[in-house]
Amino acid sequence: MTSELTSLTWVAALSAVIWIPYILNTIMVRGLVDAVGYPDDPKRLAPWAQRMKAAHYNSVENLVVFAAAVLMCNAVGISNDTTVMAAQVYFWARVVHVGSYTLGIPWVRTLAFAAGWVCTILLLLQLL
Image 1 (cartoon, rainbow, N blue to C red):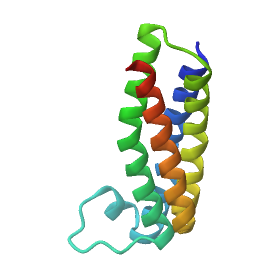
Image 2 (image 1 turned 180 degrees about the vertical axis):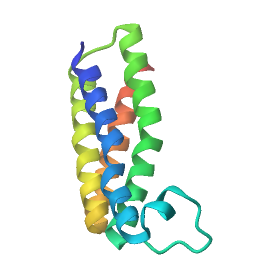
Image 3 (image 1 turned 120 degrees about the vertical axis):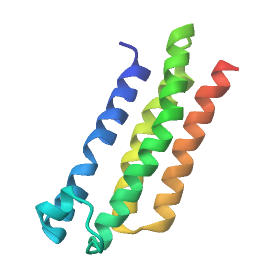
Image 4 (image 1 turned 180 degrees about the horizontal axis):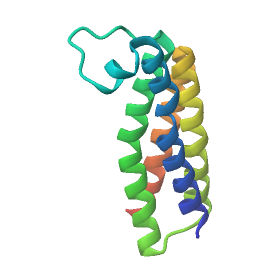
């Protein structure tokens, strides 16, 4: 497996587990029945859990484009220092993004998002 695919695997794994803390908060705040149901007037989650949920949505939205770029590079046999670096930095940018978003650190969150976006653009540029 290429380094880029390994990074993609880690990004997918991160996206696959970051829902767990905010779902646990949902169960604690609303109770199990309301957490799995559709209450008319649900209780608000803790602010950190609301932010983590938003970070998770953002992670999934960006994973689509990043994964497509990594898989296209892999399909056409493009793997170089730029693609390896972009894929690795993307993973760490997403880790920082989730952490800073959850903790409510706006500038760090924005810079981490921008770093991930630049990494995706670098991958796409390798294809063009």
